[in-house]
View 1 (cartoon, rainbow, N blue to C red):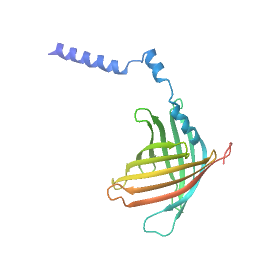
View 2 (tube, rainbow, N blue to C red):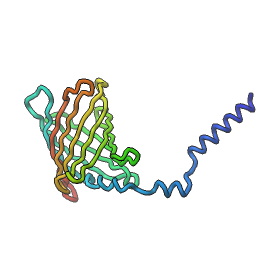
View 3 (tube, rainbow, N blue to C red):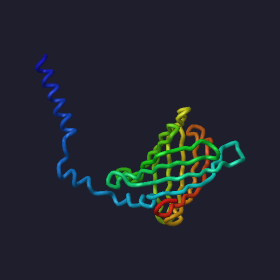
View 4 (cartoon, rainbow, N blue to C red):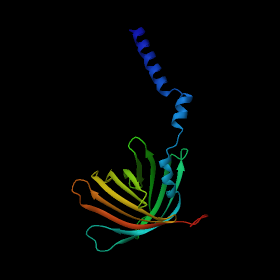
Length: 193
């Protein structure tokens, strides 16, 4: 019994060490090529000043949105990390983080979103070069009710310093609109806003 247990544990250790072992030089060279599609995300890099209007269903009055965001490359320019700080109307300050990258297997961009309410979202992104427009579709769950939510965002690149965008979020089961946001983002001059 002891001998068979030792053989089994030796096999487990061999398998585990094989999974965690160092990569070969050939493997490292193969994965070191950075997909050129990631260069499209360079337009997001920098400090941004954001403003817009938030429309909630059942309300005729739009709330103002003001904020700042900052995006920079991480992990050898394979992941773009964006940090956002904003305020809606006279509400409490909000914060969020998004991570974006290119998925060569799915032939599209992916984005993950996290905010101070516990929202965790996943988006698929495509870029229309002719229209200079990003299209994003997202899925997540409301952190308070756990209800599935879906959303769409369109971000039009006007020029190197200006974008305009819209975001709509709906209940995934009923398609009832939860929120609509329209806004603009302006790249802050070098050295700060």
